[in-house]
Picture 1 (cartoon, rainbow, N blue to C red):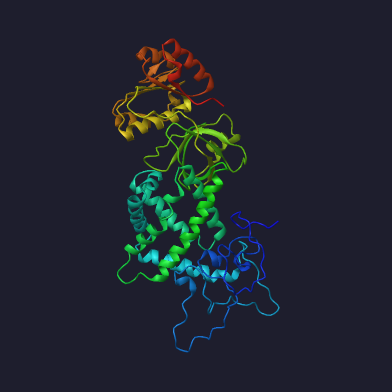
Picture 2 (picture 1 turned 30 degrees about the vertical axis):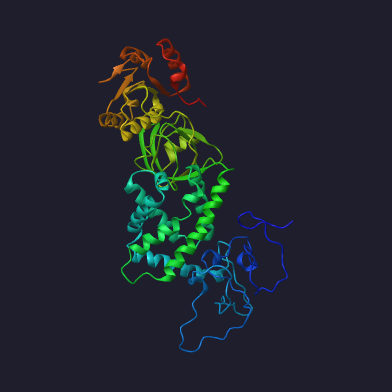
Amino acid sequence: MPGKDFFGRPKPPPTNRDPGTDLLPGEVLPGEVDEVGRPSRNLFAGLTPTRKPRTQQPPDEPGAPPTRPLWASGETGARPTGVHKEPPHPAPGRRYVASADGMDPADDELLRETQRLLSTSLTYAGGPDEVAERFRQALLQAHPALVAVLPGGEADQDELLARAITWLVHHLDQPPVLVDGCARLGAALDASGVRPDEFRMVGAALVEAIRAGMPPGTWRQDFDVAWRSTWQHVYEWIRHGEIAHATEAGIWDAVVVEHDLRRHDLAVVKFRPLLPMPYEPGQYARIEVPELPGIWRPYSLAGAPRRNDILELHVRAKTQSGVSGTLVYRLREGDLVRFGRAEGTMTLPPPPGRDLLMIAGDTGVAPLKALLIELVDTGDPRSAVLFWGVRNLDELYDVDDLTDIARSGRRITVVPVVSEGNPGPYASGLVMDAVAAYGEWSRHEVYLAGPPIMLAATKAALSQLGVDPSRIHHDAPE
């Protein structure tokens, strides 16, 4: 049985043709794949691997300009033969030692040259920030659906694209890292509903964004070829990740950007995914922390995808062990965790529609906070009243943020309800008593979030108030 190549495709059967003959379409020479099955760095960089020429070409005449390498021509199809740069030969009695990533060290120089071309042209074009702004504008004209996938406003999208361009150039000399990163991007794009044809021409938009920022006379063909050949391989690796995502669970690495211990047992933690993670306000995601591999726990998302790419979690830990204990007591800024894909159906129906009643217990306020921000960001005209039931004043850990949201909304009201001790300026007693005393709710859509016991008791109380069970929304307790 023939083996498979790096992308899982069957390898072509061996042939007895002379190495100098032209290749069949899609054929790969042995020298184009290294000993561990990864693509040769020459192939990645758009450079032709060293091979035996069909016809011996005379050397360049003294004083004549050197023969331009094949990769700078931009031509495709049959590869012409000519003078090729030979890799350095080891000294007698010595052997090359493979680099740490398993690639052929003889390819390093050529790959670094491509990296130098990308870095130099990026600098001439004004740097990643300026290029990213022009890049987004070009994508907005040609691929508006692709730009819509990026979280946040224009400034956030520019920053995200600038980070992506910088990451690409900085990791160009680490093909295994680059292949893995592009595959993860493909999975993220697939999860966001982006079709392959929507990002096929992204490379051309990027090249134009770089060229447009250069002073007159500084754009060169080798810059053009270096970027376009790089994108060709990046595109293939993105497609590989997209295909794999269809049968694999989506996973996003995310870095901690803020850790705020609001109470001795509760933290509000903010993360930035390394790649865009699609979700809707009101959904939740499962989290895995490094010290507990394979253990995933669900947490509601309190972020605002229309504002930025930050994921916000409200985590209460009953003990110092487990995923919650790690998130509250041991996680620090700069640490990495993994998110699964967003789940749950507790999202807002499109307007116009019924007004909204929201009831939260403890950290159940997190997904309802996200729904309130969505109402503000979309200018939704519906009325929303949030009742937040807690035991004492100390448990109102996020009341300031909720108050600010209510002030910025059109018809949003937040009603904290304290069941024990001094309620301060807020309502006292049981949250459902406050709900019943506030008004009539039979014509509202109702959203619940909190501990399982609270959910069951609240649903029963709402039924007695005449609320149709089909209009009560909450995630299934786990």
